[in-house]
Image 1 (cartoon, rainbow, N blue to C red):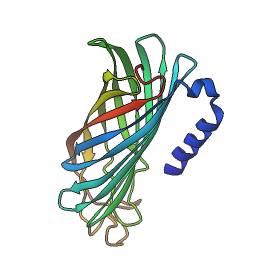
Image 2 (image 1 turned 180 degrees about the horizontal axis):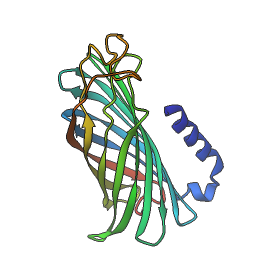
Image 3 (image 1 turned 180 degrees about the vertical axis):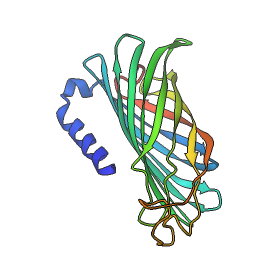
Length: 233
């Protein structure tokens, strides 16, 4: 998944003409996440390419050198995302995104893929641009990883809000918040889910029962935005 996202980024950089790149927004900032009883903090960087008035392509990476997972220990995490917007009017559009997320902590390592899709709305709040997204989210590539960790089979909703807070001559400052909520499957008995290399369990012929649970989380970041398009969406 990461290779696909990086390949897309390289393709975009090569295919867009100079006058389109001039409208790009580059950003860097700090972010924090509290999700599913897990916590992380790190650095976010990315680029956003508006083009042909109605389209935008976004590429983003968040590296978290500080992450903590309940009962599993501490370590690092990384999330890479590629997505974009299609605007049908000045204020209404749709948004889609694919994300590759991983963490490596004391007791386990895990990689998961998520897809997002839904409505987007942009407006002016307090004289500055603001953007909302209301999306359905689902984990895909579900199963048991080579090291025996089961995916959570997450599916639910995500509400996002990004607001330009203020600008100077060379940059703008904006804040981003996301609230995610939905259903996950809890880890089943490790003696029959593949964790110890025992066949059966939740595999093709598995019998282990996994209970569902409702969970969620929140992400917040502050970003410094550069480029000629820094003050707009």
